[in-house]
Length: 152
Image (cartoon, rainbow, N blue to C red; front, side, top):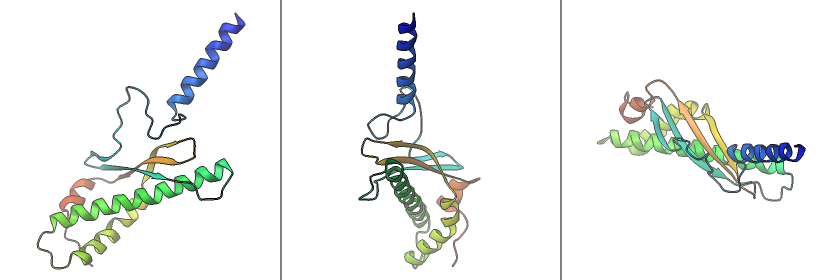
């Protein structure tokens, strides 16, 4: 009876570990789970997926994972800004100075992007980190794709 209980406990822990993203591959998802990792989730929520690697020379697993997650976060924020600037420039056809418009859009959405959240993170055996980063604001899509005129 005790060995059956031990086997059940071991299988439960293994299942829990796998379901929480503890597997060896990047981007692991629970089978059957539906999760938007890139693009518009709703008119108010936008997500990107990004990866980061640990700082070279670190041996401590906690530090390695921390620096990898920080690198992934910076890349995710950069990707969101790029997507938003690109969408705004497409809507600003005929603008005289795309560079100025891009800078203005970057400033406009900068605070929002830095205030986003990591909604999912996974690590591989080398402590590389993959995150799903989300920004959220009421009517965000409308604002990004053709909202009010951007001024400097």
